[in-house]
Image 1 (cartoon, rainbow, N blue to C red):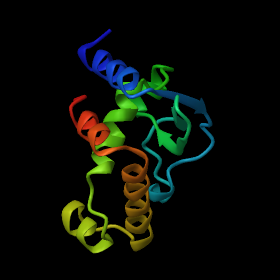
Image 2 (image 1 turned 60 degrees about the vertical axis):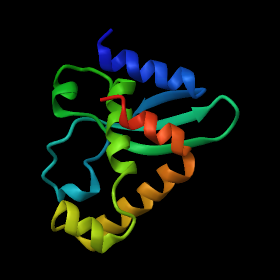
Image 3 (image 1 turned 180 degrees about the vertical axis):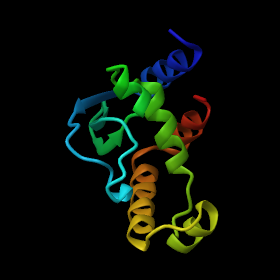
Length: 131
């Protein structure tokens, strides 16, 4: 187990969370405009042992797809960690990340808000320490 995998597992255990990634693999991300360069699609669910869950689509890396590897918890947590700290305003998001369709900016902002509503401040801090 790598250092990152160990940190992710410790984070999940410490916060009473589990991750399930169900293979979907049936479409490219909506922002790709038909130029799919991502890996397989998964439906990820993060569940609290005390109740409550968060589900979302997750595209694994192209390298993982080519190696027939499922996404590991550290990869999933690393990705959502960066998403959780994005701006909650579409114009600020575009200013920080760069040009994108407004529909994509709105979807990103909505996901950021969902992440911040699900995770506590302490958990958000812990997410940022996995990588």
